[in-house]
Image (tube, rainbow, N blue to C red; front, side):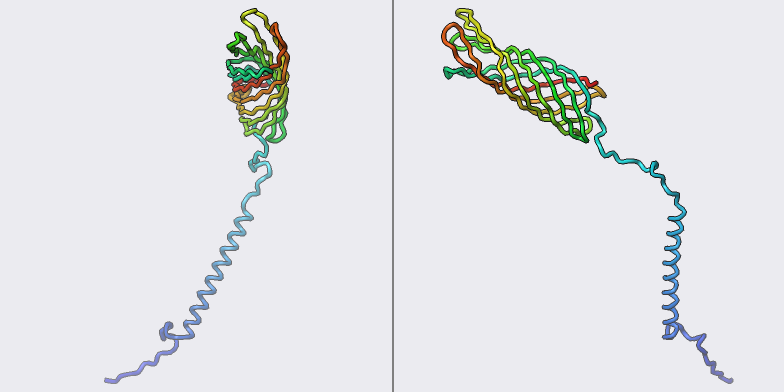
Length: 241
């Protein structure tokens, strides 16, 4: 039996054992990766060119200002509770409290989210006290002329207010039925929150501090001066035009 030796040329050698084959395989892999990257980039470019362009009016606009407009006139009703502190020139003081109710009307202007306006109001007050000297002191009415400034959060408004305050005070000596009354002039500051509950109706809650100047009273003997302060918590409802 004759044994023949078969010589293997380069084509039948194991490529994993050949440096040349290893280099060729690596080069082929790198070329394939490069081609894939090129194809991917080209595909992305073609896709971007194929997408339709959006018109400017097709893009939803983002609101830059408040969605609700507080500008315009309004009228409404107010109700609340007040705490009165009075002092006379003899050094006597009296504290009393009671309910109040009235009307208000005003006008607002708005710039972006800032709201400015003016308001007038008048209320009847049911608050009185009788001292140990049998003198009854009562606050009968109160009115203000104020400016308002606030910041709107769409349908809600945080505001501060300040202005001139007027208050009617009456004193009566029960033993002789002699009385005297005056209108006190002072100042008022306050703050509150207001919000629309419908398209035209808003509700508010506010605090006010009133400080009145001296006025002279006479109940049949000597003249004396009286000044006073009032703190109010009020609830209001307004109709906006």
